Image (cartoon, rainbow, N blue to C red; front, side, top):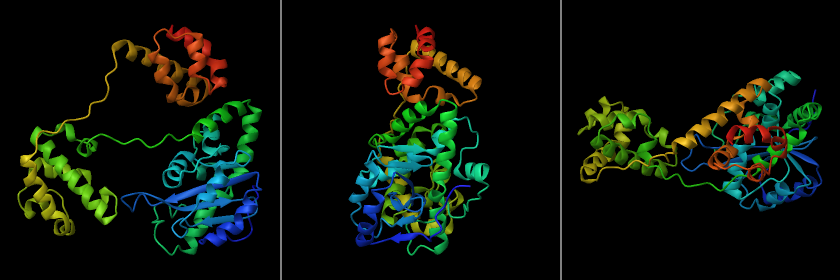
Length: 373
């Protein structure tokens, strides 16, 4: 059974409270961290809560109440402090996006579980399996941007970090026992690097499932409706799907309605028709003046590339099945393209491509060279 803090969580909602706890946190060897965001409730998502647990105390930091969190960045990027997450990618993306934070000494319990071949890798599954701890998941879809937070929400938030120390200890011991600690450290280092967010240049209409079944005229309407919905969602500060769902926009584009009654027949609720109907009818009318939309096509690779990629993916799938691991654990996606693209792949090039994973280079390098020569 893992050691868990006996004290109630401390709420950090002023700069003074943050300054008071930072010196002690900087002396810790390990910290367990999680975040909560408001992606289900806002147009522009943001981190709304940062949970940090030590071996003896849970801290709940309120970013919405503290203007300057830059001092926390020093804590996270200190290579002497191990930062424990479960499924860190989403949290690290949010922390980098909102505060430019980075982590230099990561332990990700989900990555560790995947390396060990666990099939159920959710935090609740692992804690139940290892310690017979049942997590309360009632607030997974809560609005973490709303204030004040209830006592139940605060307790829920602390639960996601306070047990990570025990889980880390258990999984680390298993990694060491199976001689996978080197591989884990390599994957932790790679996971801690979050590349800057790239702009998605796909037109908004092209993200709607079923758009390829529309005529050219209907695609123009769909594009106009999607752009109008984006403007409405931003003004209301809510996700686009909470304005009008994609499936409804698709039906409207197919029907080309000219009246409020026809909009309702396409699936708009009475409330949606009242709030957004005129704007949508205007977008449909103005779309008649717009030129055809152009889809951003995916890059088409030549036949030799596709054959090499298929061969490499088949090899890693079979290797993974033999080891009881998912195929991307054997060879992560980040390595596939550079390996396949180099038609004259040499030992030197292979060493360069797998430079940040000596474990995989040593164990699979010769097989990959033989496969792709």
